[in-house]
View 1 (tube, rainbow, N blue to C red):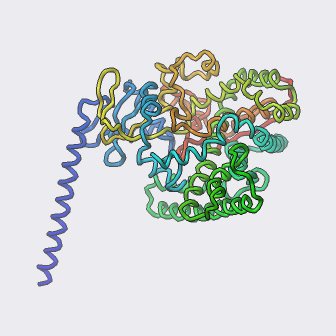
View 2: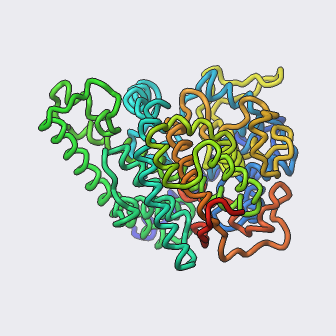
View 3: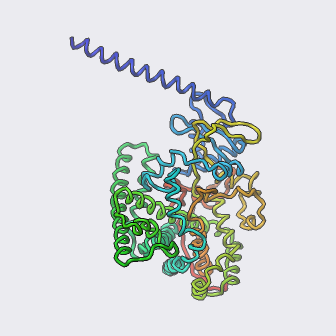
Length: 533
């Protein structure tokens, strides 16, 4: 009986395997046929766009950000402002949107909900109640709770605090200038930005610039481990990455939970008036309802609070550190831009950093007069946006674009800023670093969108822009920063970007949770005498 029993199991397994294969093939045929006649790059019936994507990925250094692949495909095949990408079964079906008006329609006029892919990508780091991937009433509740400290008036009230942390950063640059050592600009700026956003969050700095912070180390560990987990092929290293992320997450959550509970006890003990939103930290605003109504901190509330505090800390650090790293890289080859920023700083404020710092404390509104400096930041963000949004399909199931209907059923909608920003049909002469384009405004109104647009635009964009303006104001006149350890490419990897012939592979952002500088943006810094060229 045993041989017959064994043979029956073999037959059952073989039948199941054949059925699974038949189902997969039927699904494959159905899926690939659904793309027939749609605007897209060359499509393979067996591979869809997987083979093409593999060829594009091979053009770039390891772990380049996804957005450069989209820009390359769009430019190579001269694709329209809406096209389809078939990465099934390795990823969701996508509609790539590179038309600014259609992107505006998606994120502003109709405000499509976030796609479930954002949950899959963000929740393992931020938790499943974060404001970025939330939708519906959950998002509205979080937005109403978190928006007040990021209003322009509230941000200007934080200029004194931001400038204090920037002065600490300035002292660190001063020490590095004396030694002449190579250092990671991304690391230095991220510590400064983390201290700024932690003060805005908790009302006191985590002192990562001066003492080091376990919290920022755990954040970095979580992000790097998750990045490998998503792209790695070695199963042992993947398991090790999962374990690393789990331990880092446990440590970080314990630290932040302790700070939330400590602040809650202080608010109760000191009978702090939280009826007015003005002047409250982000944690105070999160705890406000519980204080007013005498509620306890139950586990559900703590999960929501923790998730959104991690969101504020991570987002508030990454945007500033990534953008300033690329800004200092770009202006290295544009000394005329640096000269104009320095002239503007002297004219709007005053020669001398200490005197400028004092003016900032007394009149933070003068930051709005730094028009050229603001445009330098905007131009950097045009070249190097830190990522893009992913939206769900339309309820109607189709788009109307230029008089033609396109199916959206089952597709992830992806407005890709990077591709718009470097499209000569959208931004004239896109390879030129030209801050004055924002004064001329010779591009479509909805084209520049590094913070996205509409109701789901980045809450902290005013905060980030002021922080970057202050950092440049208090450093750029006093220091010259130069990229170190460059390995320029003899030929550009792609036709739409020539920067790698100067900066090597640093010209292409690395995908570690967000679009980050490659190799930490190694730099050296020299002190200069203010008032000299």
